[in-house]
Image 1 (cartoon, helix red, strand yellow):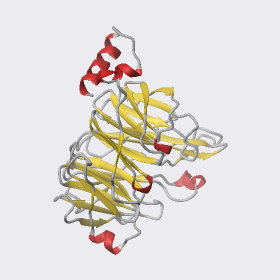
Image 2 (cartoon, one colour):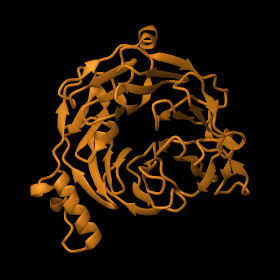
Image 3 (cartoon, rainbow, N blue to C red):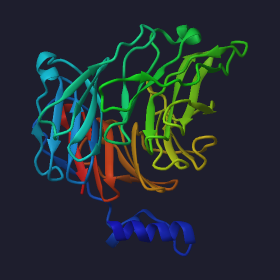
Image 4 (tube, one colour):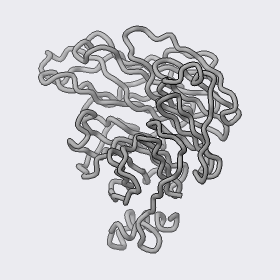
Length: 356
């Protein structure tokens, strides 16, 4: 697979050969995804891999799964919090180093392990009523994590409040608000008044640099509240770099390169658009694509893997999109690629598929 990707990049950037899906991988074969036995029937919401061998997946009913051999075997990991709250939704996880992971238990608890899941330390964030709860976490180092939360209430109430970002620098012992721009300008028929917005994704390149964004439908006259924000000083301040029709999901493997997907969360088949930025999210190119995808993981500057409803899988090289054959028809909710030739996607009914 690696040699095929290398050849593909040469084709893309030198223009010396015809670019076709079959030239994307060694031997002209499509990247092969296979189903793995998770041992769970719970809906899995997120997956993170510190290495191609060591991954954690989390989901509903306080589910935590772990593999140490690239998915040949997944085992259930228990948590004291999960035992006490067996219906808890574990919605996001990031593992910045082997055996070190932080996960979000909705609505406001972060669990952290430093010994591969044998024990977990928990922290409860006191969130105001203006927030619905934590939804995503990003951990660029062992001790530094950022988490985001969308605003609460009907979107028409967002004219007086936005979402929020939080940061820990001491391995989940304490969390502090990380100030994001309070509002964006309403683009529709609302007299250019400020409106709140929701961050739906966050991606950190280091303890100092993160990018985050989202796009939410406010109303038929008001349009969308949309934002891309960035910090390069560890969250001391965030800058609004874009407020257009921005990506609902995205990731930035470097401080300048970002790739995302714009879609309607309630109707993901509308569109969708592949979006790409080479200046840290300030401006984006966009391209209509056919596969309906709702999650993304990128490795390096050019390669991304996409996953979505009904088992949809696709990869991108720069802005070229290649639909891949999927071994499942279950909805896929998240994807992780610790390397270009090692990707894992998780979803409904305990589904885990892998390309390793």
